[in-house]
Image (tube, rainbow, N blue to C red; front, side, top):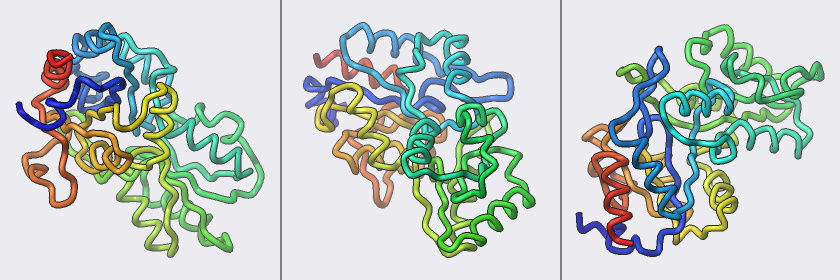
Length: 271
């Protein structure tokens, strides 16, 4: 309990929380709350510490995610949730790009009119789309990229795997790598672990990186991504966490905690 982050946590003004694996475990029936996480979020908010929820969830709209979390007992507003799709839409509009979407059907609505454009695609946007990652769909995206003079691939995250209904499943990063290899290109990553993603969340709170903590279950994308921006990163031993994450050969978390409730206990007891 004498980790460096805990000893210096009096100066923390903002906390970034991953969602899946930190607040709840996903499942086919809507998900199961990780014990103590609802109360931990409430305690953080009532303490005066600013809280934002940073997720690479792209298999539903942001509103659908917030609705699900509220049904599970969390008091979370849509403006508190940062996910890759709004950031991707901003990128597409700012660069006048027309996307070919390889995304989950439940998430298409968040792309608005960008999803219905009939103009020839100038990029491919790939996100986690579960069982829609078929050979035919991947091959379609591959052909679109190969028809471009310079293949432009945008990936909403680069996670290797995630945990759903108690089972590990391949994440978008595995399919992103396949397209990169086949097309000889390098994807632009929107979402964790991209620095711009974390910086945008902090900017919305008016908090500098040295005054923030990120809590996540993904040692590379949550913890490593945050630390690359100067944010202290804590790893919870819930969600996709595996004992082999300790010690990781590249990422050294500021600390490990058994769950979000323990992290909040330590943080608030030192204020």
